[in-house]
Image 1 (cartoon, rainbow, N blue to C red):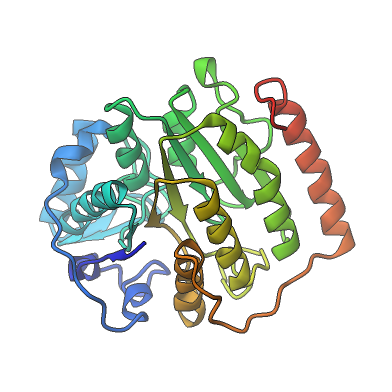
Image 2 (tube, one colour):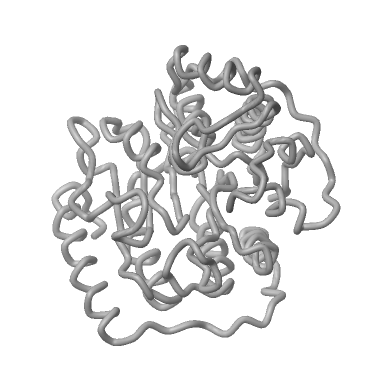
Length: 320
């Protein structure tokens, strides 16, 4: 898995907002990829009215699409390139190193720093070609836009491991999808202060369902804000978890691509990203982070939540 990156993503200018260009600048000089315009893909997920709204805001110089989401003059251009990069990554099993992120974006509105839902657009692109898609979202925040967009689908399984309660507020174990999509949404809500031990248990415990689903393509919403140094959440992961889960993913599925979501602590962003890439690419872990462990009370709360999630999903899947 290689990075798909273009300097256009730096032109989404959010100033000192937590989601700013320093995230990518912190990685140093990167090889640039030629990326086409992704505008033609937007209507796979988003309404024309919303697309026009974003475009107009940017043409007028930018502003707040919502309380948390800022756009600048070139944000629309960067956002449609982010969509195209994600589609490109989905065809080549690569990592779309993009901004703005996307998993909080809904069909008709922005949310949580996200403008267009990159991973959802790529998933729908492949569903329209007869593919079954697993979206695995390990960002520390629930990808509520992705969950909402596919909650009625049995062609897209959405699986999220996230802190709960935390922004955006939902994502409890009882949210398992609706209609023909019932059982195809897997929410694993972690208590605050959950560390590597809980995170990896959550990953390994629900992985059999994802395998039973038999996806043609696995789409990873790769957010690194569950790291213990990140200021936007209260989880306690080390970079070892990103390495270990990626290694297991590469052993479990054939067609995997990823797209960047959150991760705001500049000092550890590169370590988290490259830990994930090394795991996917079956390379040795190159950093020295020690594993983190959860307090007993946190483990107890997690086990209760896990049991409830298993209870809700067990009537749909034989593997759990």
